[in-house]
Length: 492
Image (cartoon, rainbow, N blue to C red; front, side, top):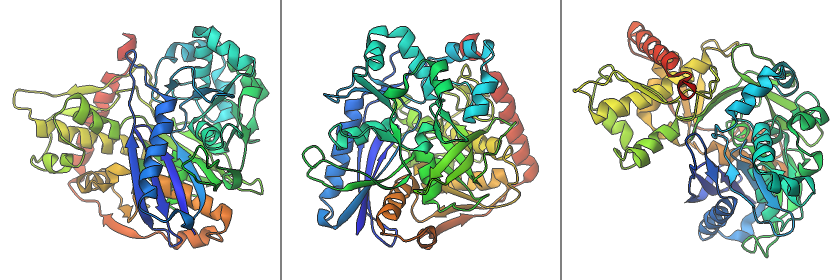
């Protein structure tokens, strides 16, 4: 009665097996390459994502009896856009990743033509390179031969979940769910269906897009000839951040979570109402039940947090692994005036500036590796505070955190101090994968209700806020000043 969950993230694929008591019994992981063909461009090979999925799944299957598996749940990086041949399932070009900034000029053009208000009204989103619609417009304008095969029906268009389902079913199914579809700039958020008006604006043929299915319930069977001998129903699908909200059991209106992954994403459940924000937050679909009921959320999307730590490891090569950062940062009492703005791929909520770039200020000859590492961890905590202060009705409620960086005690304490509220870390921080398993298990009767799922949530550690409030506020104000200095850099 266990569930296989596939979490196709931005830097790698995680496969987990979740038992009926909500525990992760086994895990497999496989990274894939990041491609940076030009400054501000980020791409992934779709084939490498698929191979990483097979490797991670193959790994986890060596640790369990696969006869115990009853269903598959899938969660994924959301706005990344994939094209593939409907017959061969090969991809004609690399996927354009959610972090990619190449469509900033297209967004400026659409904004100048007066489209932003209508797009925001229909989608709950903004005109920003983050979202999929402008990536597709860029392909049509810059790769016309490829796009002609989209228009002729030879190539399918979809997010990573759609692509993986196509591969797992040997091309039989082309589907997605509202939590992924609502990030494309092509979905009418109120109706929960594709919008002909938006498809026309972005020049995307409706027939190229996947069919929409509920977030739980049996969607399609995997084909054992292509998916490691597994014949299982795919019974849960959700974009990674909505999946984490589900995995944190934030089923009630007003409940919130923060996921520290490649970026950080703060979501608040807003129930069955689309709540609009004037402060740079996104209105988004959380999930849709098999009976058609839609649940919505407000989201603060931060593009770079864990990726900044990865940059320390792979780019600057001044740490050997992410786990070292807590110990290194703790060797100094403060950053000695160093401030880091993690705008490595522009700024998301609440600033939305694709032309911003990563900024380090306050460096002196006394600056050490420890000061820089601490400044990067503080920058992550500042970014989350920046978003939380724009969320309505947050008060002094606790903040549930998850994701890889949530295992960093130093960061969790920094976060609690900065936001002035308790931070709760669950025993299982891989809540993105857990949410996909919960959805698939709910869809196949492993769990009978969301109340059953809520009973599985267990606290690992609670971080109480502390520190000198004046000092904390002053450090945040200094960082906010640095954010202003980072803006518009790529266009200057």
